[in-house]
Amino acid sequence: MFGKRTYVRRRNLLKKQVGSGLVLFPGNAESPMNYKANAYPFRQDSSFLYFFGLDGAGLAGIIDLDADRECLFGDDVGLEDIIWTGPQPPLAERAAQVGVRETAPSSKLSEFLSAALAKKRKVHYLPPYRADVTAAIGALTGVPFGKVKDGASIDLIRAVVAQRAVKSAEEIAEIETAVSIIRPAYLAAMHMARPGRGETYVLGAMEGVMRSLGGSWAFPPIVTINGHIFHNLGASSILARGRMLVADTGAESPLHYACDITRTIPVGGRFNRRQRDIYEAVLFGQMTALRAIRPGVRFRDIHLAVAAALVSRLKDLKLMKGDGDAAVAQGAHALFFPHGLGHMLGLDVHDMEGLGETHVGYDGAVRRSEQFGLAYLRMARELRPGHVLTVEPGIYFIPALIDDWRAKGKFVDFIDYDRVDRYRGFGGVRIEDDIVVTDRGCRVLGPPIPKTVADVEEASA
Image (cartoon, helix red, strand yellow):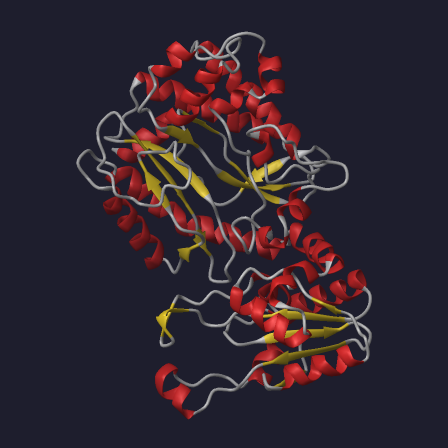
């Protein structure tokens, strides 16, 4: 965890932002795979981590905004627990590490909240994303299970988003640690992407390297030659020459800050002409974004600038035609680039998405588009120094989408479907890095991971 001043400062700022009432931060519990003693790897709730810092199951935090009082609820381990998991510091000692003076057993949480509710005091909580936490909040507040999420505090959501959106230097250092953990895994993948090997072979090698460096997955890893399927988690295909392997993975740092990196690797280590053309078009799009990102610019405008850059290269390849600006305005580019340019990054790989993507990526000045492709843009709002984002353009050849648009006669003034058909079976290319917005531009986080054609081929040798 960070030093206790970090958590004290965060909670004090939250008190000023929310105003009055009680704030409830339920931590996560163990989650059984198939019976109680066989649990999934524990992951603490990110907002609990942000404000209370303790990475253990069965905890809850309360902030009394009116009384300027904080309390951590949880239970000290007994002898039977010690036999199986070893001795643990008492809760009071752990609470002191994050600047909380008051602790109480878990059984007292219901009594504490009942007394507050009896006095008609407001209890703020964030929207839960787990059924067990939803049930617990309902039991503690008297809100029916089906209405718990609707009862989440908009004031608290806005205050938490405002704080967590701007990363401190120590948070940025954690994200860079995560990048430094995943980098050797990508070097291994580039070297191992050989014809005849299974996707699982490469994925297993990446995981072994990452875990040997103290990391864990920030999200389920995607390692596939079918890169046009964005969340292809099966890793069941065999690598073949002429295909490209898309690896979209990320590590968590020891304090659970995430990175999110994508590289596209030619199977066998060398790009053929067609692969090189598409790959360099995507890299051109990413570099367009990195040059344009700066404070005061809306990320939506960066996304559209990248779309225009991709269209220009696709026109060079005769896959698109006509007026490039009109193609982007009407959404024709989304045949090839149907997702958003990036998202916020931090304790969550899609940072704070559980609080509501609209609260995180949009505001009163920027509304979500209903246009196909652009509607999937998770982050659109004006950039500020300290925002940490992914930048991940791509070009894909998705047979079902191509067939659908062609049958409907969509965008025939902008798309040469006969030429596009020649790319069936190509898959896709995505290049993704993590950046922090600085006072004058942006900086790519962590040690560099090969991404130019020459560097990828050299690393693949």
